[in-house]
Each structure stands twice: as C-alpha cells, then as structure tokens.
Amino acid sequence: MTVLTRQRSHGTMKLHILRSTGTDPHERGRNDAGLGPHFDIPRHRSDIPAGGMPVHAVPRRVLEEATTVAEAHDIIASAKVSASTALTVATYRDGRAAAASPEMSPAGVAVVRPGGDGWVVHTNHFLDAGPADGDTGTPESASAERYAHARAVRGGMVERAAALAAHGSTPYLRVTGIKVMVDGTVDGCTAALGKPYANGAEAAPIWSLAELAPVVAAADAAGLRVALHAIGDEAVRVAIGAVEHAVALNGPKGRRHRIEHLEVVDAADIDRLAALGITAGMQPVHADPAIQDDWRRTLGDERADRGFPWPEMTGAGAVLVLGTDSPTSPHAPLPNMFVAATRRSALDPSLPANLAHYALPLADAIVHATRDAAWASRSDHLHGRLAEGQYADFVVLDRDVFARPLDELLDTRVLRTVVGGRTVHHARPEADR
Image 1 (tube, rainbow, N blue to C red):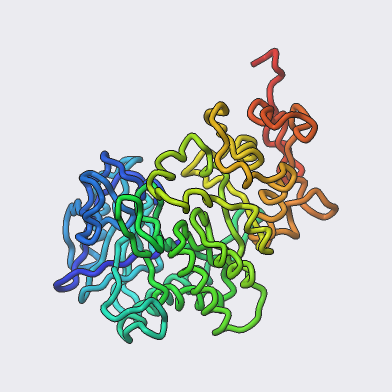
Image 2 (spheres, one colour):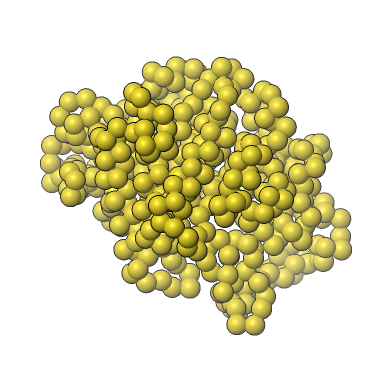
C-alpha cells in the first residue's frame, strides 16, 4: 500500500529528516496529547485543542536537513531507530513536495530519490496541501499547475504499483492496487463533512477532487484497484467523483474499486456509488457502542443517527465487504460478527444497541466478510467459499453459531483453522487449558 502526501512550503529545495512515534494513520487522526507536541497544527485547524493532532498535521521534529540524496542516506544510516520510531524524509522544492516510489532501507526507513519531474519522496505522514484559490473541487476548475502536480504525483505512485502488480504473486501475497486517504476520522474532527462538527470545526478533504481524479483515473487505466479511505460525507462525494471521472475517461471495463469506512454518508451518495459499482468496505468494530459516545457527540445532530448504514449499501445494490480494520482495531472475527449481527458491544455487551435497525442477519454478515471480500480482491476464484477447486480455507468452531443465541459468539472457540487444506491452528482440549 502506498500513501500519497503533499505539502506547501516556501523557499528552496531541502530535505527534512523527521522523527515520529507510531505508524498507524488512523491513530494519527485522533486527538492524542502524547503525540501532539511533535506536530504543528495548521492555522486553518486552530479549532483542534492544544495537544490534539489532526490527520493532516505537519510533523515538525526535524532532526537534520540535507541538500542531497547522498546526505539524506548518510543521516539515516547513522540514526538510531527504535522499534517504535520511524524516520521519514520530506522533500520540499519550489513550495511543493511529491510522493512516489519509496526505496526502503533495511531498517524500514523511507528514503528520497530523484524522479523524472524532480525530487520525489515517500512518507507515512499526511501533509495538507489545502485548497488553491479559485479551485471549486473539480478537475476542470483546477489551475494548470495544480493539475499538473497531481498528474506528476499520480504517475510515480501508479507506475510503481503497476510494476509491482506485474512482477508476480504468490497465493499469500499480491500487489493489486493503491490506497488513498481522502480524509481523517470523526473523533479527531478530521473527517471531511458537508456541514461543520458540533463544535463548529470544519475539515477539508486531504485530496480535492481536482487532485484525486487523475490519480484514480491513472490507476484505473493501469488495471489497478483503488481503495479510498473516506469517512465523512464530503470525502465520500470526492471519492465517488474521482471514480466517475475514471469511468468517463477510460470507458467501460471490469472495475472493483472501493470506498473504505463510509461512516457518515448521504443516502443519495449510496445510490451513486452503487450505480458505479463501487464496493462499500465497512468495519463492524467501529460501530461498537462502547466507542460511540465521542463519535456521536462530535457530530451532534441527525448525522449520528445514520452512522454505519450497512443494509443501505446492499439495499442500493452495492457489494458490501465487512472487515476488521486490523491492525488498527481489534481483529477477532467472531466479536466483529457479533457487532454486525446485533449492533451491540463486543467490549461491553450490557450497553444498548447502536441503531439496532442497521444490524445484519448473521449469515449475511459472514458472507460479506468472506465471499464478498474475496470478490472485492479479485480472488473469488480462489477462496471465499467452500467449493470444488477453491482453497480449503475454513475454521471449525466449538458450536453451531447459527443455532445458538447471538451472544454466544463472544464465547465461541475456534477449534481448528485450516488454510489451503493445511491445519495452522489446533486448540488444546479444555482440560489442558
């Protein structure tokens, strides 16, 4: 997965070697006082509390500056990097930074290198570009410079992903596409919404439609799938618009692009994404009532009463894929299925259900997490079902969960896990535990 970033700055080209803690983009979207001191809050996000950290905050802990790639390599090679620390190189030139084709050192450090359109860089931080004057959010309204920049960024990442996809694969590892972060999170007030948050905060998408459209169109033309992280309704509209642009530009073809999360989404946009064949990738764990108080309070209005509308996706004709968002969220599948089938909390089952009318039948939830997930990854010919000619991937449980109360999903044990016909997990008998 390649994450694109960009940043406006001033002055001549320079390299910043940055130190940061943590590597999870979702956690960087939360107001984490422990990480906040390492980041500058952009002026237009003054609504974020002191110590808070929006997804598009700018890392400011600059260890050293370099003026050549060789210097950057030397600095990184001599740095002491712990398991919980990441070094990132950010490249600035003529007020722009680009991202593409990372070279990874043995320590897992991203290093810059020169590209066809100037210096390019890979970084695991989200650096906010902000809207350009006169940019109304469409490819047609973007300035020539801004659109050309998006095309240059697009080219490096898409070309690299396409090359990796063509390099070959194994039954356990394939490069199939790219992921682009269109916004942040509701809890961090960084999900892009059409209306302000309850506290008056507003967050723009990380990518405008003008910037995102050429990236998605290029990936689409290259036969890659695009996963678009979009939590807020405005980000969802940008993501849909980018896919619409790709369809108009590249014509009919088999596509399996998807939008991830879709936590706050208008009914009209669900119809749009379904009509385009966009897959809805959603995670029951995020709807757990135990973690919903802040989410609902942050929205503060009727939007909170339409959160995580899984049945509306399938009702409109979209393919719904249920995942766990691992490793950023608890990944155990049976508690995840419990939330999907009850809208109750796997963390505290005594809590009332979160919008119980959005619960899914258990059998449907499992299909969305298996067969439909395999379809979305273009591997439905290999797995996702127990069928002749497909991999024997299955688990054996200690009870028939379809014949027992749903609450028992939380106590159900996996006795055996079989992958490709080979047992990879075998539970000890109860007496030995």
